[in-house]
Image 1 (cartoon, rainbow, N blue to C red):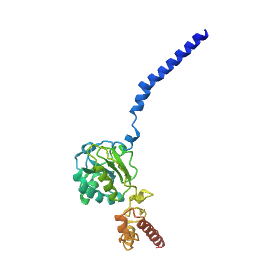
Image 2 (image 1 turned 180 degrees about the vertical axis):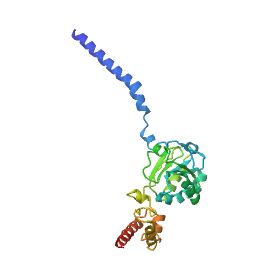
Image 3 (image 1 turned 90 degrees about the vertical axis):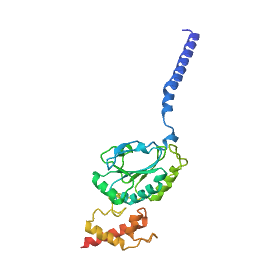
Amino acid sequence: MSKQNKIILVLIVVAVVIGGLYLANRYWIAPVTAARPQASSGKYPAAPDFSVTDIFGQKLSLADYRGKVVLLDFWATWCGPCRVEIPGFIQLQREYGPQGFQVIGISMDDDVQPVREFYKQFGMNYRVAMGGDTKISELYGGIIGLPTTFLIGRDGRIYDKVPGAVDTERFATEIKTLLAASPGQAAKNFQPAGASGNIEVETPAEANSPVPGVDVSKLSKVELQRYKDQLSKQNCDCGCKFNVLQCRTNDPSCGVSRELAKSQLEKFQKANSRI
């Protein structure tokens, strides 16, 4: 082959390669890239839809609340921090419901009967369904601890995920921001109200304790009552003007009352060990 023919062959190969790359980019690479969600749209993922029956036998579908702000709460009747939060959710539903807000509770209890009793006892004013034998928790990434709460905007996207119990005011602040958007529209300049207020727990026993944040699982019923009586006789030093037990119940995020309650538990257990 002559030198001139070799040059022509090289030029042909180069042209074929360039043409192939162009076609691959146009019909293969580019469409795949275009199909990927952009970072801005992925910041607030779409809330997975679900359709179940509520605890009173009525159909409950998340899609029915599209255009509203939804607080989706995973909870259980046996979960101490959950019980602390629910009166606040009742108040939020009462205050912001007329403006387009809806609380939906997903109980992780094994049986519906105690949930119905709890619902009536607490005067709950929002929809509740069972989540223990459904796949709702899996749709939301798996619920490891209770409570776990999601705030969904009017556009059907999840704007905040809150593990643990927090002060109701945090939710109120975020709800007002989300309600400011028009139905179906994204919330502008949304900022989480922060992680302050979380009940700091290290074990499930602390999370599900009748004295929020303190593991009392080793106490008998009689001992637990005596321990709670002691807490009710000790004033909290955080400035709340409550006793320690009241502060733990009303404000589980208070680090002062938690340390006082833990210190009192150690003294109580040592005193019992000498008996």
